[in-house]
Image 1 (cartoon, rainbow, N blue to C red):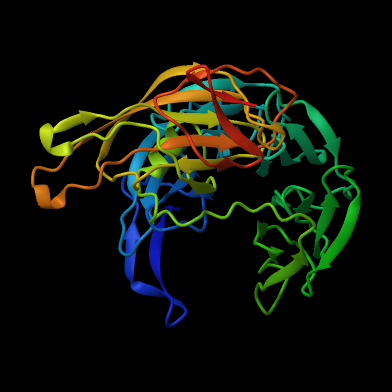
Image 2: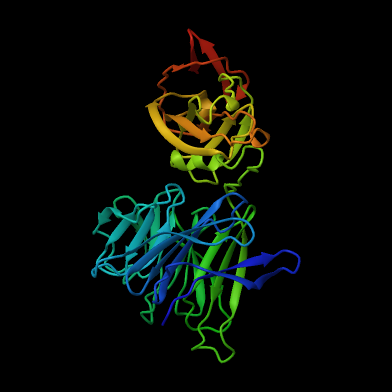
Amino acid sequence: MKGRLIAMDWNETEEEFNDELRRSFPDSPESEIVSLDVHRTEVAEGHRAWIAASYRDHSVCVWTMEAGPHQSAEIVFKIQTDGSVMPRTVRVDHKSKDIHVFSHRDGQVIKLDPKTGIPCLYKHNGPSVMAAVDIDYHRERFVTCTERGFQLHQLGNLSHILSLESEPPIVSFAKHVAFVDNGNLVVTGTDAGKAVVYDAETGKRMQDLTYPGGGLVQPVTACDLQDISLIAMAGSTRTSADGSKVLVWTKKRTSNTVQVDSPSSTLGPSVHRFLDLVGLPSVTPHHRFTAAYTETISLPERKTVTHTEHIAVISSPTTSVIFMEQQPITEFVTKLQVVTTVVTELPPATTIRHVVTIRETYTAPSTPQSQPADPFAFTITVGGAEDTREVVRVPAQGNVEGQVVGGDLQQKDGGQETR
């Protein structure tokens, strides 16, 4: 059986896919697809989605595709795992873009570099069978269908967290699993004519979602929208004379933490290069903040300009970014380079863990008419963190004015001090 990946444009007017604009994925193996993951499923214009697939012949492929009409997929890498690793499930890390590969047997989990596909981490202490896997990136854990039922494990060290209160299987077919409602719930398939929803913290059974045709309900999936969560499931054609039906269930969300990407047009397309550079998802919320920080650079004076350094502050676990600039970050950025790192903090509502200084290099266009306004940015990532309260002064190159979430940036002794 040959696997085939295609992409089609969605027609907003007709509310259907345009079948005439199918696009293939380069370097796809001549083998059956066993797992597919997409991050993100909804992509703002100017952003890129990551598509990862694993195949029966042990291949793992990753592509990117930019949002917009008629875009083509671009291959990032294609590798083949050794004979002991059957890549049953592949997942794209929502934060780092690392590729997690879960072997069907022998408890093996491999993490691949998102740019090269080179394995950067091997683990061998997972469940002996992992027939289906989904990852909760907020809590760094995964749920899997094992030979002993459904289990939750830590993503870092693969240690067992808990087992879901599931019934013994009737048949050995793999049942799909999915986190839902921001990781608070887990939904699984069964071979008893239903899908089951569990509390992810206790493993307790919460609700049965009955399939009218009975029998095997193997495929289930879920997604979180702004106010509701959706769960989709399908039955087996072997147990229903009328064929398989797809049922979609809705649930009001108990938490509303879906990351909504703010418009990128006011900040320029290179915003996402900053985010990728410091290891943040390209969909990290970003906000505008007015400041006077750097000297003006006259672009006509020279063709290649090394921009004054920017500051990016990384926090955990909750992340957002404040961009402070006079003009939009230009699309002419060609190089971003980490220069130094320090540790600092902002006031209580915006405790900071880590600061990265970035040097931006771009090439000015040759024609004066197409030269952009002088770009510049002062980048801060804010969010809740642990009780780290160190304060280190960052050398100032000008006065910073304005309000940062939770408090003021204050000038003191020739340096910016954050309190």
